[in-house]
Picture: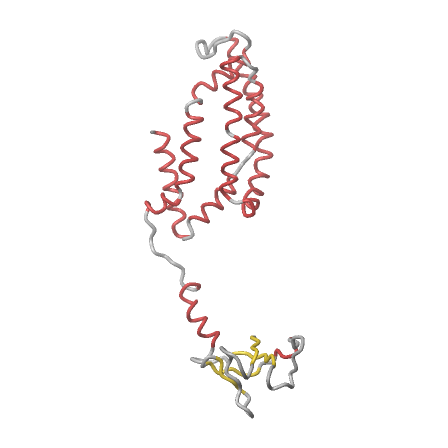
Length: 258
């Protein structure tokens, strides 16, 4: 339902309805008076009885060739009813995911370089002062430290994951308002805190408890929902998303190997 102002003077005026007829022509498209007159009201200063200026509600006739909505439907039908199923190259997908690739490679470098020694550091801390579980992993004191470490890891990871699944469900919605990249940047920035705590323990003898507490808090900041939303944003072709996950895994593994 449209509303058109008809005037008898002025540039760009709409064609007027011939006297005594029930139809008018709008840019070559026949239209007729519609049933929506009761839903509209004249603007201030207008009079429906004034032939010089009137707001005329009308609707487009439904028919073949002369219908405006039919023309619009024919223009949009190819896009709305026939989704694009053309194949997307792996190079194109990799370029769209370049931001995620950089984040994944930095995360792999950050934790891959510390992973082999992290278990021994934690085990030696629980074993007691002076213990070196990397040099003597089979000693009795290191075995006791391994038991205490496993107990703490079970408690901390259970608490962390209990919070993480809640954040994973809500972060995707929050990112619709805040944006995807700010969430990724916040996650990357938060990952520095556990590393700094671990460096303070190794270099300056600060208690490892700072790292053992900061690590689970960081892991509770789950952004898997944001990641899935980001994938849907950059890979808009539904048929290419499985391929995109494959490209992402290959790139992640390749970055880890490098």
